[in-house]
Amino acid sequence: MWKLFDKLRRTPIETIPFDSPPPAAHGARGMPVVNGAVCGGCRQCVAACPTGAITWAEGTWSLDLRRCLFCGACAEVCPNDAITQSNTYALATKDPARLTVAVATTGRCSQEVR
Image (cartoon, rainbow, N blue to C red; front, side, top):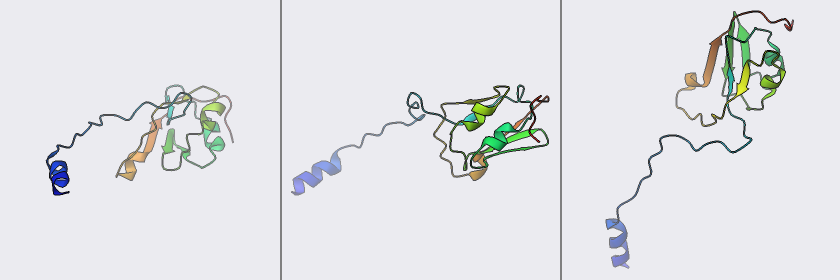
């Protein structure tokens, strides 16, 4: 038995480098991404978000990734197609501030929600 433990102790441990997460599965939705140049500020995405993860204030679109479900409701209702679903899903971090995405937007939207 001691020979077995000695062999295990002397066997080097192989580590696999983890540079980036594996790609998302086909059809999986990732983090929403907004194109600030196309976003007109209609705030339909804010109304459609079931968790309240999206806020819009003073020309800035903000997404709280701690609340986002990656459901895609925001992208579906955007009349300008300014929001797309990326394939980024691995968002582990020790700093909660890194889980808020803010994008400055320009222009006006003809279908503004009041």
